[in-house]
Length: 463
Image 1 (cartoon, helix red, strand yellow):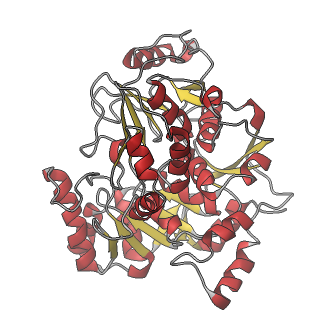
Image 2: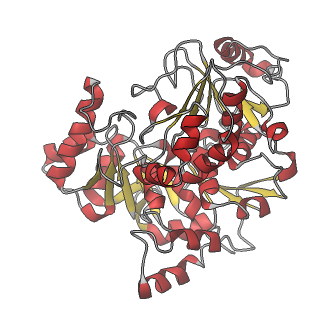
């Protein structure tokens, strides 16, 4: 019987099996940041253990960093402590750090791909749930806990149970104004926030293979939001062209050798999946969330549904938090904030789309609109192309790289009760600040909301 893409990569990285059926999995790349690494480094120090393979570990500061005046000392005490501790630990243990001020600093899941560190066929982990982003390259990539961060630092291996395999196939052509963010929000709305629990998901079909690498990263990034362990897409010429020539990509004969292997990374025609789903790309529209998990999403033209009897209490609690009701349309709903950024949608392709849309327009006077690039490399590219001037002319604030308003862990918070159309990945209660109301959407839908001052169907506003 043929193998799935997941099984090919998994089997190539199994070191040994232990009693009980768990496998010791070799990890090719380990990304760390300031939030989940301090306790792991402390554990190594207490046991007098070095980092086993420092060249396989890459560190950056992203979650707690300010997005203005990064050249100044961090004002918030806890954030400053965590970032300083990362610098101290990386220096002590010999780990390569792209800290504040470094030309490669940025959100961990943005810098890996753009620097060519992320490559097809790898196993990649990080103490961050959205590590699934790297699966867009045909990788087994997933988030781990702090104790597991310590385990990988010490051994470059991880004890794991093989998950089940799911394939989601989307065929057809997307409508104008429908982006990859809409694809994944659509999928999660169909499967629910727990529909992928226990699975590793492969995305396939003509609608997926036609996407750019940055669009594919958005889809894999949010695999975790339907409960999946991770998501991946088979590498192809689009993947190889993206990786080639990047700073840490293979070169010369090594490139040829790696490329020959990468071309074997696909699910065999007779491979069996534990679960399969099929969707038509033409049925996907611009999506918005109305509740407090990413599964509570609807097409922008639809009405908020009625609750199912089994989850009526939690459903109504979510609607009450968001200040909306069943049967209500979100079209025309006034919003106060727009956040364009996060590891989901802060790459140069996202920001180019936003700039193209807002050029010559002006944001609504009552809206605060913030654009945060995913890395220093993206920031520099934005400025090189003059996109920052377009943002400024339209009334948008263009900031410095970091996780920013994706989560309430830094200074970029949304006020209590305010509505924020966000390109981030989670709309949990208080995720963007205590009492903040988050509506997840694509960069185009977010940009259109900022200009209109309310939620609109971006398809009717395209030139």
